[in-house]
Image (tube, rainbow, N blue to C red):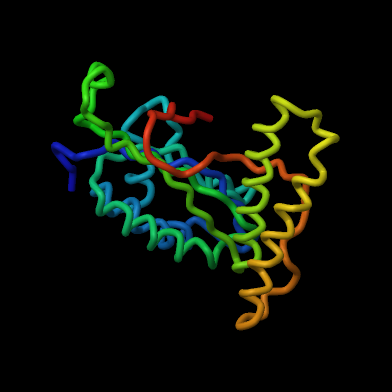
Length: 211
């Protein structure tokens, strides 16, 4: 059902590669936590964003990808829907991917920035993938992208190989800890480090992403 006086406008953004055998029916089931939260009776109805300029939730059959640029009014209980969605999507993915979620505080006005009031805006990054190793690879690529982007302001890209190697070592150690109890295959290593996304955290407002 529609949520009046919701605490947040919640924006979900991401591109998730899907297995070739995944169809719209499977995707509708996986995304049920989202469209039901929006008060819809199906993915088709719930895929429409609160903002007409946003493409909403789309299934690209040719690319076999889930594309999300979708806003819904909601509260903190939406986080449970996100957890359920990620668990459902893991089984449908072809590779690891990041999903950005931004909570915009409806009660905070830009004029409030000059006062002592603090916004409840929040930004979180979620990861999905067919295996923990694929999820870790997506996390690694995102971190590399962020670190390189930051450090290239001060250093030439060719100078940053050592930084990338040290980050890879950290992820290799984390992977080794997982491998003790799970058979996950090869640890994540360099794959270009060109993932998209940003850091999680509280604070300043982030612009909505549009395709």
